Amino acid sequence: MSVAAKVDGRMFVNGERAWAGSGKTFEAIDPATGEAFATVASGSKADVDAAVISARHAYEAGWALIPPVRRVRVLNRLAVLMREHSRELAELESLDVGKPLKQAEDDVTAASGYFEYFAGVADKVFGSSIPLGGGFVDFTLREPIGVSAQIVPWNYPLRLSSRGIAPALACGNGVVAKPAAEAGLSVVRIAELAVEAGVPKGVFNVVTGVGAEAGSAIASHPGINHITFTGSVPTGIAIMKAAADNVVPVTLELGGKSPNIIFADADLEKVAASAASTLMQNSAQTCTAPTRLLVERSGHDRLVDLLAQRIRQIRLGRGLENPDMGPVVSERQMRRVLGYIETGSREGAKALTGGGRSQKPELARGFFIEPTLLDAVAPGTVVEQEEIFGPVLTATTFESVDEAIAIANGTAYGLVTGIWTADLNKALKVATGVKSGQIRINGYGVEGSIGLPFGGYKRSGFGREQGVEALLNYTVLKNVMINFS
Ligand code: NAD
Image (cartoon, rainbow, N blue to C red; front, top):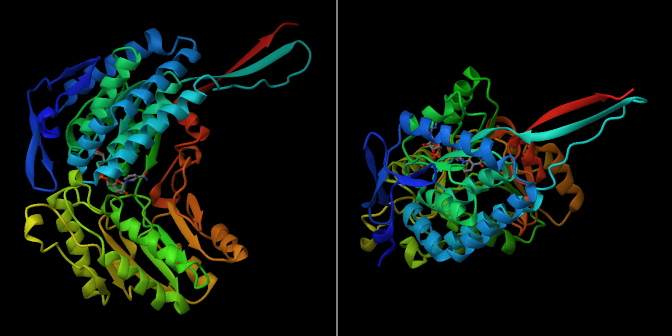
């Protein structure tokens, strides 16, 4: 049976699959063909109400009260179950988002890794004791924050939902998740597997639906105690405003326009390989993608040459057929990205590779954009400033460390910065000068990155996910003073 034939488009509330109370649905579209492959429940306020009530009841009545060591076992079991269902989850993610199957399999590994990591800390959510002198004892407790809302974008439904849901569950909270309408069916499947792993029914709910309806009903719901939102800046602002009315804290993981600062003394072969993989990785629909190449002038020609050669070899195709690069997620996203490429050319940028929609007849129905390297991009231009969120890299030159820092800091974002150089002093000068939540020197990825605190400066958001810092989002600190004198 094909993966599409097996897709269940219902949401997951109170431990059961369910259609929306209103009966409303929408279609899930395969970005490689433009065709619908599933009918999905379109949740509204009534479904959100049911999910919030279910989450509150289930966490208060049991999940928050059990010895944390039992949560350790359950979350570890969930991680194992996810890996046992790796093929199924990866096929679903690949079909839904359009990404190559191998990348979707990596997403399953990373997503299950979040549950494993936070299972490991579920029984180590410590308070502290505070000395007050004779006759007094004082200590703090970290209690669950309550019902955690997890609003997730379409680019990495498995990874990004797990990033927030795993620590929320580890701390004993209830969860109401809402994946994006463009893609997010895998999130519902994780909730189902969670029940199989032993998470009590009702603790972990997923309401599928569109942002303006299901998303906004969650953001403004008085029964929600914390919102983790990953997505675009305008939606982040709307969510923060809605949460303000209920005095609810938010963690915002928003966009990025991450600079990749390359000095001429770096290993340019290695940089070119890494930059080409930025394009291939989910067609660069990745918030952390280092899409702004800032290249020291003396290394520029060699780097763009090496990079263009690699980009020309990238093979496009349907995600399920495991090409190097898949389509972008939707027709809307394709039009948006193509619009940016046109703007770049009006602004004087030169497309060294790609520059438009794929002309291959076999890809004509899908949302395929050729991997594009825009050279001679001036600082301050639209394509250098705005998040394109598609397979487009821009190249800009600099002459000095100070100029590199100034250009790197010259956008509204501050999520990640890549630095490539053989000179560690230079690297550290840049690392301390840029306003960015993460710095990656001489390598952009590392196994075990789940343990590294992640989040933004400026319009990239605030709050930190991953690592033990994430526990702060999902607990409230209570102080207890005892007078025994
Ligand atoms: P988006 O803001 O359009 O949507 C994100 C989620 O919010 C979806 O589930 C959507 O349905 C929901 N939503 C939309 N309007 C809403 C509203 N009014 N109230 C409540 N929820 C609403 O973002 P997107 O297009 O799905 O994702 C792309 C963006 O996400 C990019 O800007 C990207 O950089 C960002 N992103 C950030 C990170 C990070 O960790 N910093 C990771 C991935 C993606």
